[in-house]
Amino acid sequence: MGTVLRPIGHEDRLSLVDHLSELRKRLIISIVTLLACFSVCFWQNNAILDVVTKPVRDAHSSDKASATSKDPDQQAAFFVQQQVRAYRTLAPALSASARTFDALAAADNVTATQRAAIAASSRALAAAGRQAAAAARAAPRSSQSTLVTLGVTEPFTATITIAFYSALLLAMPMLLYQAYAFILPAFSPRERKVALPLMLMVPALFVAGVAFGYFVVLDRAVNFLQNFNADSFNNLLQANTYFKFAVLFVAGIGLLFQIPVGVLAVTRLGIFTPKQLAKNRGYVILAISIFAAVATPTPDPVTMTLAMAPLIVLFELSILLARWIDRIKPAVDDADDEEGADDAYDGAPDAEADVSADHPDPPKLQDPEPKD
Image (cartoon, rainbow, N blue to C red; front, side):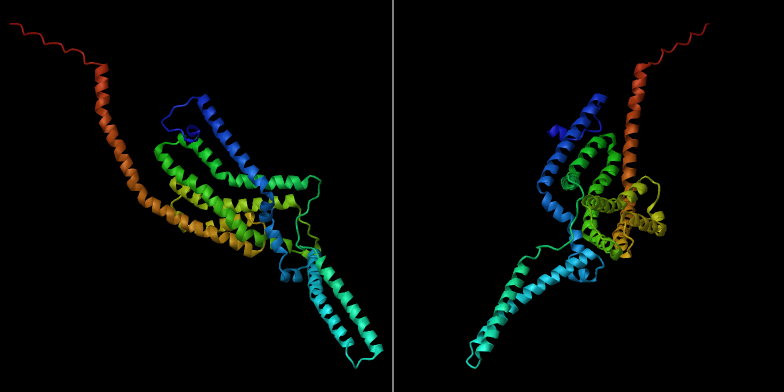
């Protein structure tokens, strides 16, 4: 297995069959890793579903949001919550009142008629207290909105879908390593110095973007969309539709976090210089705002600003990093050029010697002796 995980060296020469065999090994390792991660995620599907559906529950959990919401379902849920609180408060109050009436009925200055009326009131209060306590105990454990399924198989297929997406995210480091190990041998050592840091930045920035999209932006996006024109619609959020939206949403934020990779790529390839990018940062910010608007399909300015702010910071940091690389790059390139020139110079006499050995000079003709 160690030979399978080790990347092939640039100096190795492989045939087409060897390349296909190497690709097959990489694919087998990737598939086995993905299946193992999928097994773990499917085993823990309840925990994953709780994490993924948390933004939906948070959008309807607060009492203030429920009281001001125009969604009929959310208003009904808020009414149920208030009823439960009233029953829980009323039950002990009624029981205390019944005990107070029993004490009054036992007083000496109360007539028989009054004692009978007080006893009847005490029994009614005790019965009402028991009914209120039973109603409070019968209240639903959770009145929060949850996802709905419309088909017989949709609960199973939705669980499979979210488990696969989670497994793909969990297996991403190994999958990317196998892809890099197959591609990197095609690069020369100098090209590898440029490509390897960029390739390592891709998964790190993607995971950072996914985390930022889930913990910061997704909650606000779901809250805005679920309460937009809520008085005109009865919002029933389907499971498969929400999972697709959530995955595409956080994946889009993860792709937007690849801005440093793009900046370093165009500067290292010589398409743009860091000075040109800094000079035209207004156009870049406009492009970032457009990308943020597309990747975050919510028209509210708060969510769009939250998505844009880290992208602009990443762009400015990328320019600083590109300038720093440009400062240290000439010295490295000059040293490499001098080494190449020395190697060429050192090899020149050897080449001439080889040519001389292969093609020896013809023998020189002696000049004829002068005649007397």
